[in-house]
Amino acid sequence: MNKPFVVVSCPIDTYSGYGSRARDVVRALMKSDKYDVKILSQRWGSTPYGFLNENNPEEKKMKDAIIPPQLTRQPDVWIQITVPNEFQKIGKFNIGITAGIETDICTPQFIEGCNNMDLILGSSNHTKTVFEKTIYDKKDKAGNLQGTVKLETKCEVLFEGLDLEKYFHIEPKDLPKTELVSELDTIDENFCFLFVGHWLQGDIGEDRKNVGLMIKTFLETFKNKKSKPALILKTMSGPATIMDRDDILKKIENVRKDISGNLPNIYFLHGEVEDKDMNHLYNHPKVKAMISLTKGEGFGRPLLEFTQSKKPLIVSNWSGHIDFLKSD
Image (tube, one colour):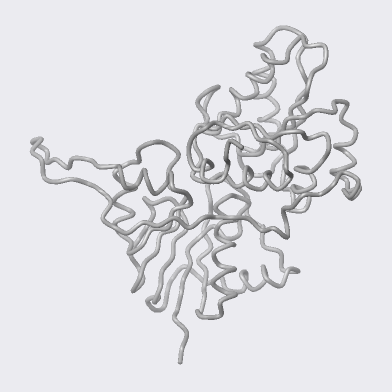
């Protein structure tokens, strides 16, 4: 008996949260051995390609499953891992997997995209709730009410989770002396806050993850203090290029120059960092807490990863990460 033909359209080969989500889903489908799994590799914004390593048997299997964009037959199951306005009904059964939205309402295009599918799997209860509560009036050009735009498709929460073989607690004495760990050892301060995430478009207070305002708040809070903590900033705006690095350095300096006084240090970590090195960063003894003033996350993978270090997080009390970050 032939296995059901499953096609997953996703950013499988990108350095992004959606890329990680895609690899988790594809890995699970392949491990089940119930399906004939093929992949349509998509981009994800300006995040770089090249995550899949052919020397890793599991990732090579994913790479070998990538097919050209022209499908030769209809999938039994079509899965899209992306934002809802891109959802298309292509298979006999269609599943949309998305972190969804970061606010308290979503656009009509997101709702209409969800309604193209047979099942929606959101990353958090926040995602599911916003989809279900968003309703728009649909009017003609004369302003007459024609009906409503609301979610008609079944929506469930598929928690993203994390790989406990990659992210786990390490005692300081057991940290290997890698290049990254040795570099962190040279930091003068013994108390560092850590931020991990993309620095997206917008001026201070406008970018979704609120990186600019977080830096400003950090500098204002600890300026002129006798004993200052540091901030380690693991961020990118796009591909891991020199231009991107220099652009972020300029943005940091633009925040700093508007604040007078003796300011605390910011250490900037840029580029592609492997999972094991990220886990070493989370567990490094100079890193005492993770901080994020994000204005919304469909999920927030770095926040979940950091919990395994057994250190506290200072995070906005809002959005997808509330599913797994509890006040205690």
